[in-house]
Image 1 (cartoon, rainbow, N blue to C red):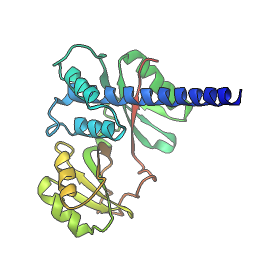
Image 2 (image 1 turned 45 degrees about the horizontal axis):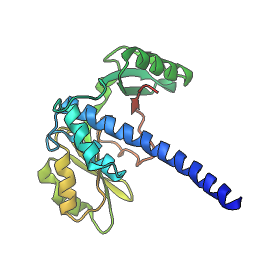
Image 3 (image 1 turned 90 degrees about the horizontal axis):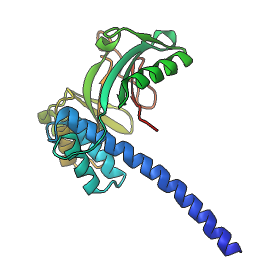
Amino acid sequence: MSGHSKWATTKHKKAVIDAKRGKLFAKLIKNIEVAARMGGVDLDGNPTLYDAVQKAKKQSVPNKNIDSAIKRGGGLEAGGADYETIMYEGYGPNGVAVLIECLTDNRNRAASDVRVAMTRNGGSMADPGSVSYLFNRKGVVIVPKGELTEDDVLAAVLDAGAEEVNDLGENFEVLSDGVRADPLVRGDQASGAAGARLRVDRLPPPPPGGGPPRPPPPAPPRCQWHPIACTNR
């Protein structure tokens, strides 16, 4: 009986792990589809798609699934849900500006979910344009320091379109205009950096007169951008 109980426990644990893994895979595949639909299937010209593909590969999503998602998003293959990206604006507690990017296949449900989440947490919705001007779309590459110096990173990424390099303690943060951010990763890799991570983000501008640098993660800046994915369950 003990052997049977052990197998039953193992089976249930495996079922839970598989369910979580399947949910994660579905989310990553959906992000790839939407990125390909919004910006095209060219990884070099679509940093959002490049980022989505890299995240999927890190989670061991099969290449076949990734390729199919790109084709569906680019209209080269039938199938896939009709997702759209909607931007909401609002204010959090103490007047903190909040920009919410929502990926959904149901616009009405998404609006309701966002409004409820904001209200329950002491925030309020705002009219379009109320806070979006506070944010700039940037390509952000996080580079583990290792043996690298700031000069090494600068030399590798300046020709790739980098605008700024910040020292975050254990990592360097490289910023670009967000249009072609993937060359930065290749530049960092050429400099010997391992594990460089790319994301396309919306960041508040620096304070007037330069001011102190943004604090390193996880401490957020005062203005925050929150991606929220709304899907049917």
